[in-house]
Length: 137
DNA sequence: GCCAACGTTGGC
DNA sequence: GCCAACGTTGGC
Image 1 (tube, chains in turn yellow, orange, purple):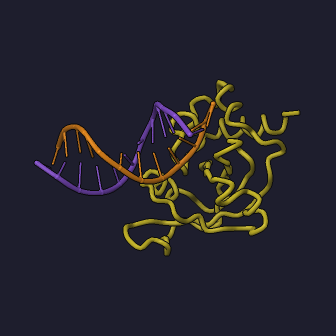
Image 2: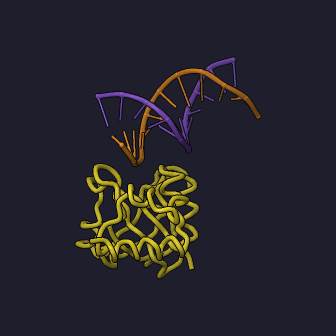
């Protein structure tokens, strides 16, 4: 079982959009590392949804509903999409500044590989994020 | 195969 | 708006 993190600019596609859409094709990924991560995604695995931009924070929880298959929007190259479904909002968003401040989370790719748009998250990190989100006032 | 130039991402 | 980090492109 793997845990994932996907990033999105809320102006482009926000977690709120996903809530309304129920599910979406995660397309347009044009980075090999991100693509390879998508190819490892298994149906049912949890996905943290991250907003980049003005208020960088983890915002919600989604789930893989369809594993990697060919990206029909790709005109050239070997690219894939996955399908993810809305699950629920985090009780409180977990800001990037918080992630950086918490020692257990400081080694997350979110911090060390900030530009990667599809990332693996360790179970311990995933649990910690949920815990922080739940406890925040 | 190296590396400079360039474009993009994303935090601040 | 700036700039660092990083990926990609293309000349040699």
